Length: 285
Image (cartoon, rainbow, N blue to C red; front, side, top):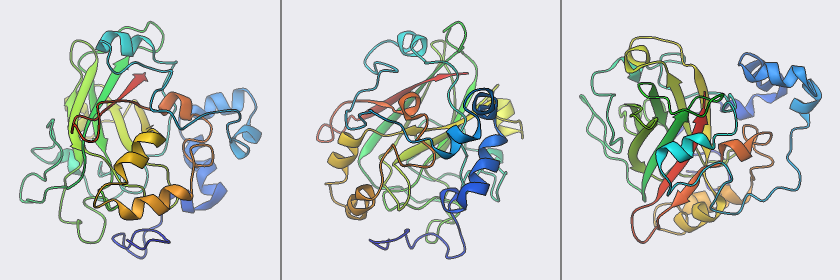
């Protein structure tokens, strides 16, 4: 990775969504359900001037959920419908090139290793990822839905797309929500690449069958990872380039999270030294 710019393991002709300018950003956001909220209130002015004020993004806890609580409690505290966000340029869901969702093996809990004909293993600090999915109106847990989660490597590249890992499919997987509305994954802590706050992408589908057979997601969003934990992880071996990339961004300035990070900031439990870090996000649909 180039310490001052975007990671070199991305193809030279690849452009992140956040680098495509306001016209692209407006078009992407307006195509999603969140456009109804934007136009219904402050309108496009809110989209252009979306920086949050008076916020504190440095803590490792979020008001949206308590990760140590039961899945039902976490789901009940979802603050309305999860904000709709871009899936980014590397979704692997067939909407932009490769379609990992159609591959046998994509439904799995541990996403640290590739599956099928690929054999790579993603290195990094262990991280468990929990999505507590609930009905945004009633707060009831939503069992039987499917969550597709994906994120970048320790070095900032995306499997299926980035140079050096284009033949891998690790750090991608689908899980069904259980009786408590929870879908869990075992993974590694993603790195910070230039221009974006550290994050995990996800899509929610009506069922595993819908997710793996070309269905449309009912929600597309991202988890923002807490700053304190990011800094602690990035002080460990292998994450050196993430330190300088973190210094150049914030939740308040990030193109995706600036206007909604409070609902998308995950809650962390566990420790880096203990190898039991877990991030939990309540997801209202």
